[in-house]
Length: 211
Image 1 (cartoon, rainbow, N blue to C red):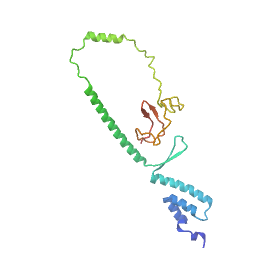
Image 2 (cartoon, rainbow, N blue to C red):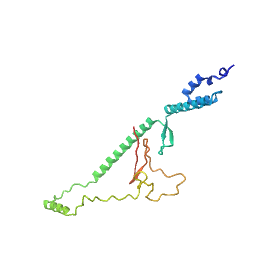
Image 3 (cartoon, rainbow, N blue to C red):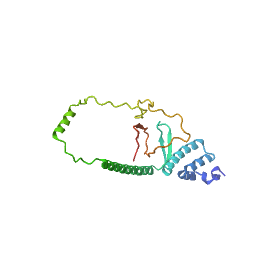
Image 4 (cartoon, rainbow, N blue to C red):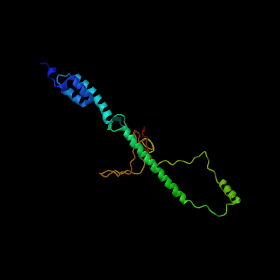
């Protein structure tokens, strides 16, 4: 009796191919447990099955392979991209509604705080002319010399910091942190992105990808 005749059904070429198309890891296991299989056949089959397994994980499990900021190390993650963007858009819409409501409340407060128009006598023409002459007599600010912009003493306003050297010029940073980590002050969901942050005047700026 030859070797092919005594092989189990799952080690036969047809069944192995069929099982590999549906569950690639099972096919990989069968390739390496099948007897009298040449090494180059096993290596080639392993490479093909790994590609098939990657495609299956991408389409069925949402596997995504992205490059880290260095462009060298891959990052493997499992998530539904469309569902992620749908949640992000709902969050941004709710955030915009809350901001609009706060703006309306601030406008109402400003309107209620405005003083009532004076019922006294209107300013005379002579007084108005005198006021204009007083303003015109002031020394004008030359347009050729704009007011200097103060150099930021702190903040991370561009890539690698203020001087593009990776040196932080702000307040001293604590060198001892609590074991449980720092307290989270805020959280903002974002889309996909690889950009670093720029920080200025309490605001954080970055770039995200949206659909």
